[in-house]
Image (cartoon, rainbow, N blue to C red; front, side, top):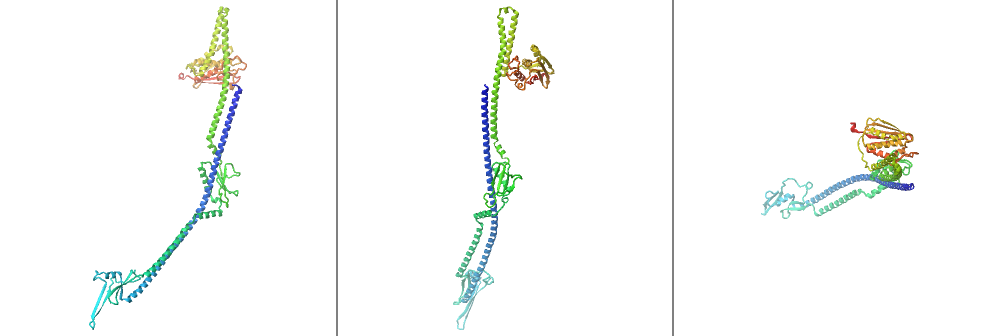
Length: 614
């Protein structure tokens, strides 16, 4: 990929990412504004409800006060009216008793008058009771009657029979009839003598004459009507004391308008705080708040929730409303409500939105970064593969050219006759074929390692013996560059489980690199030591070294450290990648420490053979 195309893709992706970021910020801001507006609506509704309740409480207090006054007044009037009714009834009873007494006197007077008339009209008229009247009227009551008859007969000088009959009533009780002492019967009975015939007879008179009874009945009816009308009038006055609700409300409203009451007496601080808290909780607002109440027409704070609640000018997130908006005669008062942590509430309600936006942005940033990283990595891999192909071509070209030259020489008849030269040319062809085969095997080993197809043998290996064998096999190469190799194989325990062939290749690669990457005669030191349950192998040189950036990439596939003016260092950039893979498959680690122009040290850590240690 061309650098121009890479920059174009990076630019377009950056613009797209910034666009998404800006849209997310706009969306979050709009969501915050919407949440803030909803919060303000809830607070304003809560304040409006608080104001209505305060006014209702104040009005209810006046109504209750007025109702108590009216109730006491009604109770007092009820007591007065009840006493008036009792007095009225007592008076009626007294008047009724007097009337009855007067009627009785009139009846007695009339009876006395008629009694005198009876006694004048009849001889020896004597009043009898109802019991005596029934006795003498009963024909079966012989010998037991209270009536005694006396007959006196004689003959006068002329021979005429003369005489008289007298009858007397004998009272069994012996008590005389008293008009005032006993109840009079409906009819008054007299035993008398007929003045004409001189025969006994009974005379009856009515206790009350009809005209007098009618007169008395009329008087009683008139008195009873007057009593009922008077009692009804008193009862109606009592019921009227219940009052009229509309009139009561009008009186209360008039009193509330005319009487001046300070605001702090209309509503208490605790009641106001309780109402605000309740309305906030009803709307799911649990934020801490401060409130204060001040006069609307004067800069005077009446009371507040906290000591430092009221500040001037008003801070943000402060809401206010008129407490008694309908009161035009008194100061209506201003209620202020302040939320110091409003933003934290809104942001906490938006955590899901913000988290999703942040997560989306992080995903996009990760994708963007990973895409750029993958493009750059692929570009580097492409460049390294190109270098690898070039190096491989040069590495393969040399033995192929050597074999071709040797093969052409063998076609020469003169050379064929010289057996020594033929043998030498055959040896050259063989060596170059081996060299070519080693290159091919190295590339194939790396391919198998990448595919995890390389099978390692795990057997007991003595690292000291293996290092000595590798160094011995490389003696000619080391001598060619006058290398000085120092072995400090001081580890008491040197047995591990591993693949001897691949471990020998690991040490060969590391020693070969130390030998190649030195401008002066190489100085190589191999040291072993034990740490806990591991064997440490350090291979150090004093060659050209590497920068920190190069040490980070030294184990990458196809990567080769630049050698400056040295053009004789050949390779595919696969050796250290192969070394790292082999060590890791043996459960070991490899580290590199290097400074530019001060040499490099590779440190390998391998687990010891625990069975042998036991």
